[in-house]
Image 1: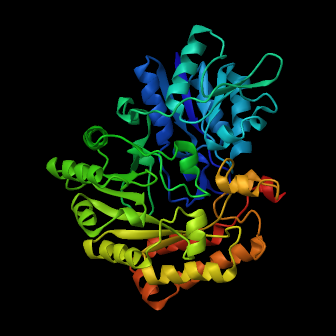
Image 2: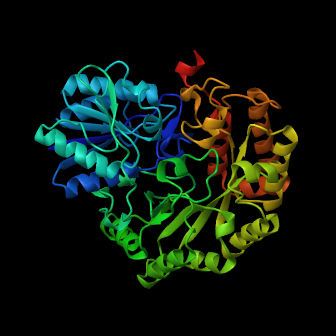
Image 3: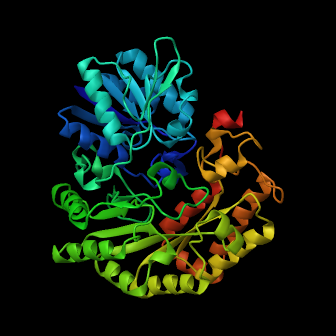
Length: 473
């Protein structure tokens, strides 16, 4: 059976990367285009089950909704699965409805937003099913049932519409325990040459070498989507994927998309030693992780194996907020400063992820975060507005106290204020934080060495608080 997996085009206001924020998605720079690696994982599982699969990535193809519809219809699918995000959900659903009407295919959606708010997406009869949670096994079973003409009832991890119009939520599907049992992503279905990352010359790709995070931050979509239990692929399985992308597809730049890449230091050591043993001297990569999982010896071997950049979750410089909302991942500020210093010493660039606007946060607490970033002196910084994604502990904490407009969940727009700061105050504090960081004389001199990247950051700064037209109206 022919199955088409779809990464819909981004809204016109900004690019959305649907795999970020644990599958809730995030507005990103136009210079960033990640491959829809979740769909490539699903495609690998479907091909292993004997199906014919195509991936349509609207952003990589450079088309809008009309172009995406034409491409999908031309593939004559019997099953279509669309990815989604919080901020693009209305447009994603509109495309799904048009696909369903034009093809007569079974149409399903996946992603964290529809997983944790599945009832609302069935309004208007635009989709047949929602794939909740990890999609590989559920989509594969859905495809088998559609191919055999069987009913959807009894499919774990699926929500679907009964003939009487009611929504049926089947039992949760267990998280995949043996990640090595999954096929490697079907990169042969992607236009790999089109994916890029700001400041990186040449195409990039992404790798998910583990799932889950034990830190349990109140705002985190990754722990919500992947669980608190750290599940990892063996070094051999990861190296098999790296060999495929390096030898078969000629890719030399990799972004590891694990929530905390260095949770198991021995595993990272083994991956690095495998890269070195294979002589992939021109393979460059980056990852995201937590300060408390790094030390100088690990950073040294990572640098030798091609690590060029690490994004680190700093979140807040206030210890009360760290304990309550951030998994206490930054309890030792001296150790944090040493990690950033060690990265500089071994030649690894750093980015600090920070957030402003926690429920009890005061302007003075936010200033602690800004001061900490000054002390750590990363190469780059990202300040986001705290966002309560559906299903997270933060969302449960705030639900009932405010209305949530999912269309504004870009990662930078402050949805609401708190008792100490209005939404406008939070966004103003984020602007202040960026100005203070990048306008320091030492920082300006460093930025002027790469004028193209500097212009990209200026453009991002000028557009990051833009709201979608549907939300603005």
